[in-house]
Length: 191
Ligand code: ADP
Image 1: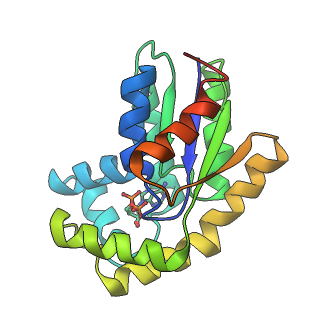
Image 2: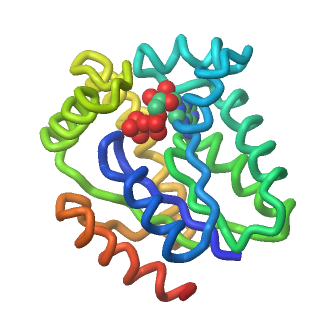
């Protein structure tokens, strides 16, 4: 299997690039943001609980997200590999993911970190809010999400750097050019 973590702040393009990557390399996309939004739409107990955190730009508690990821991996059948998008977002989640994959006899191969300057992130997220209707893409909540990222998620990069798996990529270019940069790294593992 080939397992990739697409890492980066909110608005760095993880969702868009994940779509390109899964289509090209035939991998399964696991986005905790999408999974959580689907729970919210279906008004499940998990969704109603998660919504309180999401609307405030805060991370959903680790145990909720880890449980959800564990079931998603179990449902995946014999995948060629996974692209993790928006997960892990805390060191506890990174540790839990290593354990879950080890149980499946596999591991994370590569972590690609998309780097985008902060003013650019805020601009992108507010623009997206205008068209997507996502209630957490407004200036107040966006600022909080970026704060949460610096406080809790950024340290996860160190966790993977320590394992020798972290590669940073400039995420400020066009969608196509950024995809080329990411592909150059992924192509060293699979075709
Ligand atoms: P973005 O990366 O643009 O912030 P996401 O769709 O990945 O958007 O996440 C939206 C919200 O869902 C986050 O602000 C957070 O509340 C919640 N969320 C998503 N993934 C996680 C996670 N791995 N751990 C905790 N909360 C999460």
